[in-house]
Image 1 (spheres, rainbow, N blue to C red):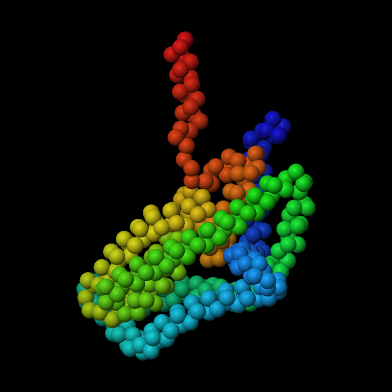
Image 2 (cartoon, rainbow, N blue to C red):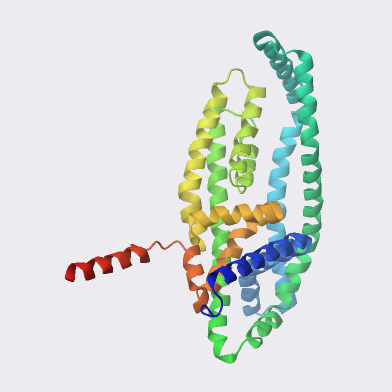
Length: 364
């Protein structure tokens, strides 16, 4: 095939295929996002379903119990967050009052110290509100999409668990019998990779939330637990998430405390936590679980965000992990699997060829 189709013909075809794939994924995101999340959740719940079946529970009852446990865990997290939000909402009138006082002080300082007129400041605020409105609309649309996903997820997950054997039989029957061993190996390693990734992501989130909360408690910032957990959640977003995680506690400290010492300490603490997360937790706990190198981890997360938003960022690494497992077992695609992996060779092939040429020349 390499001789029949030269590189300058193959490369545009590959590029066109990638563009077409990205377009299809973007256009069908309302269908594919909940389905992809359901596949992920069903793979996590599958060991529990199998264990319940081994204990003698019928298939439908095993699925129901697993889904019930998963739902209770999800609702428990929501309840914890809601209790923290309630304590925040109780103080909201006082926070609004202090924020108004702070806003008036900032307006007056800009006018007195920098000579910026009130009319100019009002114009800036109007322009800011005009720019923010589309973002709010997009956020509302994302929330509605999240509601649709919440409704579809249990249905998709239950059906995937119920029709698991049918789907597996299809995958085995669609390929030749001689490849049954390879297919079984790919399916097993895919399941393990996704499960390990989710465990790694959970561990990373708990550690980041704990570090955030401890830092805010030590600094005496109000709503430390809520802000620490929110910081860990938005941390899923690369670059932007780290900025948002810092902005929220800085705003609360500015409203509730005098001076700027606390704000500076918050920024310093969160920068240290971000360094630990980016250089220790993500490379060695999250990405290493699916054997994807750090560079590709960042790139695929950004691509996932461009295609499917927050859900795409969350699904990007397990999706690429599955691709790597498949690439590693197809001879023609092994170079792509190596590119995605985290194993760095001692020498690249160019260096090896140079060494061989030097030896040949020295012998002559």
